[in-house]
Each structure stands twice: as structure tokens, then as C-alpha cells.
Length: 315
Image (cartoon, rainbow, N blue to C red):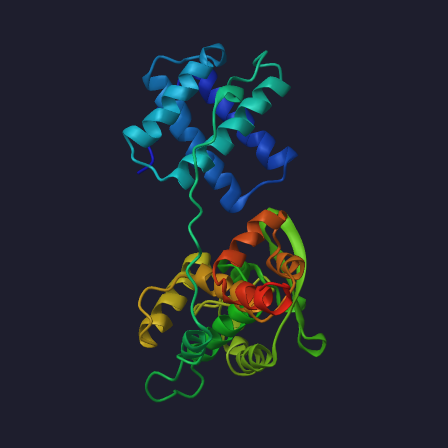
């Protein structure tokens, strides 16, 4: 569990506030990225303060090493979480050097913990078919009442067809949906736009939602903000709601625990299994670094073995 917010020494509190202002205004970060920085930096500064650090000059390599050791020895955090903490610490220390608060970077002495890359969990094509077709009317439809199962099916179909993140479901705009051109414009991680194709089943599902459901939801508040998918009250759909929708229909399909990112993992894995180029999948996912996409090449080795047997002279 993260540390509870506590009153920090004045200089540390000022460092925290100035760093967040820089990240928000100069770097343009917000949402989940800024929230992650806040959690990690809160943990760091509270822990350092507990161990006698009150000014920037006290943030030494030894102090940071002690903090990193406590993350694993006392808090038992996973290596992936510790790696994320380390990334935040490095960015914070680099900022302190760049702004003249420190002469040398104390994070230069920190080693990255060995990180075993967990293979992403995916659903098979058959399981995905069960999930996207699970939404169905619940009881007798009532005239004038939105049939939210049509919305949920459209969300599931689009997430799988186009590799959407849960947050992108909520931020997708009605104006960005181009059914005639078979693509959707997304505003994703890192405040970057990308255009992703949509398949025919997803297009039909979204069109059914737009015809029968959204017109009933949007007038409820008049605050739909032009978003494609709306809540039952007519507001833009939150990321947490997408998790609930996926979990609800996964249970109905008898699939157990399924989270939204599994649909994205399945989208990428199934494309690669079908012969898609890794660079194309990178673009579709919106990954800035190809190494992030490469993890999907480890999920199923059968295609690579078949290619080796087919083309290698001694395969």
C-alpha cells in the first residue's frame, strides 16, 4: 500500500509542488501519468523525511539506495513496481540537476532491478467471441429506456477490433468515429492521436448503439462532451466503468476474471499470430518504443517455429 500523505519539511514540499507544476505545464503530463508520478514521489519524499532528509542537499545516493532497498525488503513490492519507482526517481533527480537544485545526480548510482517480463494474459479467438457476444437483453426491453447491452457490446467489439485502452474508450469522440472510412481517431497515452481501423462486426455494433442508445443517453444531462460512449446517466464514461463492463460480461460468458487490457493484449497477439508485421502492430497500439510491442512475440512461439521449419535450410 502507498504511504499516507504527511506533512513534509518545507523544502521537500516545495520541491514536490514545483516538480508537479513542471510536469503538468512544461511537459504536458496529466491523468494517469501525473497520478503515477505523485504516488511514487509521495512515497519517496515521505520515506526520506522519515529517515532524516529535510533538504535537497540531503538527497544523496545512499539515501536513495536505502529507499529502494526498503521498497523491496519492507514493502515487498514487485520488481515491475520498483522499476516504475526508479523511473520516477530518475526523472525527479534529473529535474533537480537541470534546475540547479543539485550539482550532481544522485540517481546515477542506482541500478535497475532485474525485471522478469511477465507475458501478458490473453484470450483465445474463441473466448473473445464468447465475450463480445455475451451482452444481451436483460429482461423485457422497456420502450424509451436505453438498452445498455448494445452499448456494452459496441465497447467490447471496438476494444478488441482496434486495441483500445480502457481510458481511450472514455475519451473517444463521436466526431472521431468514421464508419464510412472504417477507422476511429483516438486520443491516447502521452497525449498523442492515432488512427486505428475498425472491423465490420465492431462497426455494426457501434452503429446499433449510436442508433438506438446514445440518442436516449445524451439529452439526460446535456454534458456528453461529444464523447462516443456515455454512462447510463448521460455523462462521459469513466475508465473504472469500462473495467466493470468488461468484468460483468466476462463473468456472464464464463471466462472468470478478465480485465480491459486483456482485450488489448488479445488484439495484438492475434494480429501477430495472423502474420501482421510487428511495426504495424506497434502503430496500432500507439507504442512509442518497439521494445514495448515485442513482448507479444513471446506469447505464442508456434508461428515462429513453423516459419523456421519452412524457410531455414535445416529447419
